[in-house]
Image 1: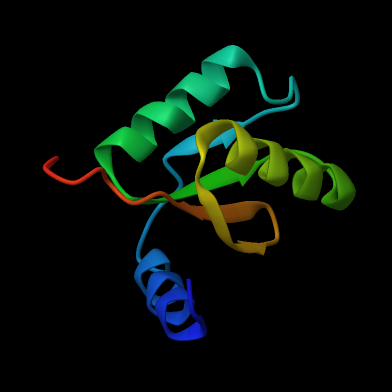
Image 2 (image 1 turned 30 degrees about the horizontal axis):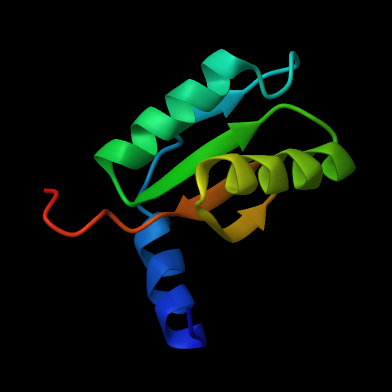
Length: 90
């Protein structure tokens, strides 16, 4: 993904509300399932984390690895993930 594509995704993410939350219990199977479901419905999502700064970065990386999504942007307690839809899906 090049810089121009990332800028477009960041701009589109500004209008989004977080669709999933990772609470103090961490990245539970239920939280991961919710994120996976949101990525199946949309290519671009926001996730809100309820942890300290260092742990948020680790959790965002784990979400990206577990879902196959790219971590586009992380600021504060919110991270933006992008996973292209498979061809032929709507």
